[in-house]
Length: 308
Image (tube, rainbow, N blue to C red; front, side, top):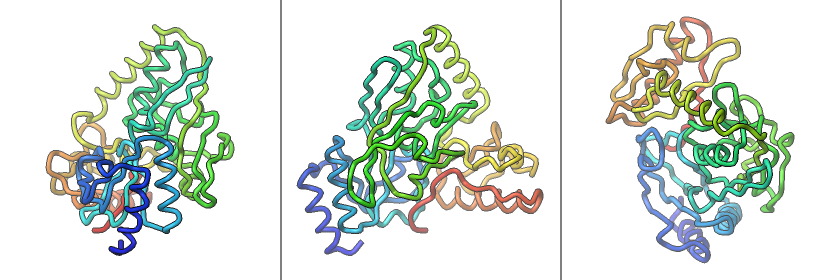
């Protein structure tokens, strides 16, 4: 971003956000689950919802380049870095309140923590998300799901910062247009502030056993010991991405430090020193090979941002 604009934006941000919550040249390897990629010009970590709204208003008014980041479990920053501001939603927006069968959660609450709260309250229906390493806001943004469950099955409503108008409003689950790994937020740029999840009363022991069984399946079938972004490709209609990759003979194939997992071909992992370029070149190799063999173009589930 232009120096004059940056100074203007930072001056406005610092009216509400302390300087120690603003990091220049932030190494995005520290903030993303792939542990690869370049730096962002600035990373801003609001401590509460009011600071987040202030930051969004500043960025909206100045028409600045920015992106909202949750737990970083579905994002890859290219090695050239991100020329803009990353708004990191974290622990300052992670409250979880329970009333009857409804959990009201800040957008920074981790899905794993929400699932434990639900267990403690004897509420069932969120077990599917117990092993997803994302935050609540990001889960709404992409309608996260696993093991047959999706956010749209449990979500009641969300409060969002509407980017077009700069107002905060509530949206029903129907307004979100939730489908496979998609919400209308991808088109509008609106930002989730909080959400309401409605669950059902259940037996604590049964809920706990289901969560343990899903964890056992993940540990058995997924390369959880390596940095990754989970399932790398979206599921093509009528197919399974991992099976297409495996049938194309790509299991275990590597580019630099990036590898198609030998345990689950739907995962691309960082074996230790992968660059973002390694991961992207491997992605393209997989896409081209699968397309040549089966006529199916795999679409990444991972959001890839920044400059090469």
